[in-house]
Length: 101
Image 1 (tube, rainbow, N blue to C red):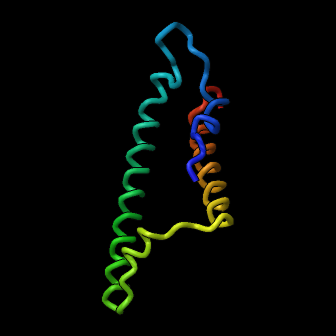
Image 2 (tube, one colour):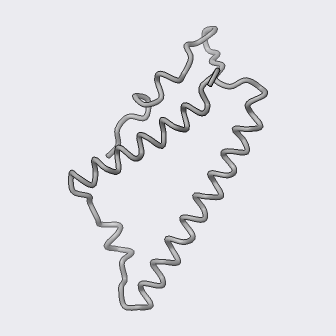
């Protein structure tokens, strides 16, 4: 479930121009990246908030799932599905940040 992110990212990261210096984004791209990070943070918070609220609603209906979710371990099929979806998400983000694309 924790495949190395570098294996997904490697093709999009340009080689070092100078020792100790890597230019992945141009200055013109930084505002776009900052906006994207803020948008992603807002989405992560919305999902976190809704998930926590859902846990409380379920608890109010007699289904205390919080501890069960924490203990849950996916079977190999679900783990493979989640890994593939994660890899696609990471690859799409890396592609969007790749120079010249």
